[in-house]
Amino acid sequence: MYARLLVPTDGSRGTDRVVDRALGLATRFDAHVDALSVVDETFPATSEYNVVVETREDEAEAALEAVVEACERAGVGVEPHLRRGRPHEEIVAAVDAYGSDLIVMGTHGRRGLDRIRHLGSVTERVVRTSPVPVLTTPLTVEEGDEMDDEDGAGVSDGAGANDEVGSNVGAGANDGTGEYR
Image (tube, rainbow, N blue to C red; front, side, top):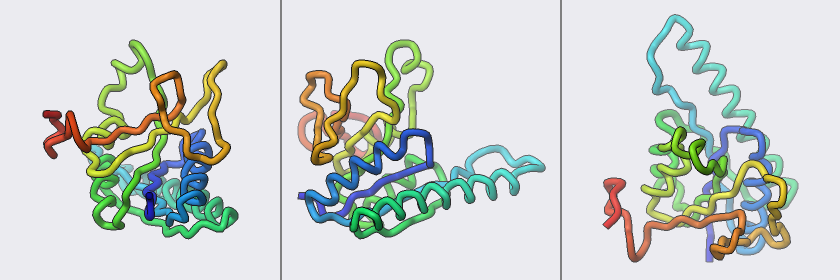
């Protein structure tokens, strides 16, 4: 069903949950993992610009190494990729570049006013513009939430499951401009 999984990472706390989910799917479908980290260089130039970019590159490389190590321990084929630019744009561009057929990425799972304050998150933008399905996994677990990690293939059934699959295929499809028809 899936041959190449794109796993974007920035090394955020909880990323191991996303990697575990991706490894479960990769094992189940004998899929290859493309680990991706994007260095966001899209901020105003300051006297510290080079230091900030270098720090972000170091963090991105460390995040990629963590995914590579997890994949190798699980016996899953993996290739790390470091890109520069706007994270949501680079993630979507990577789908075509690497032949990905599913994106597995984390979300902070914000709700209510907190969600409104953070509109336009990277994950939200990817879900809206991706040409392939996106499996989102919460980076943190709230009390009372459970996550079925048995085979790494849990998908939201709308009944309070933790994972959500966003796809712009079929009814309500994204027309490529970020707008839904």
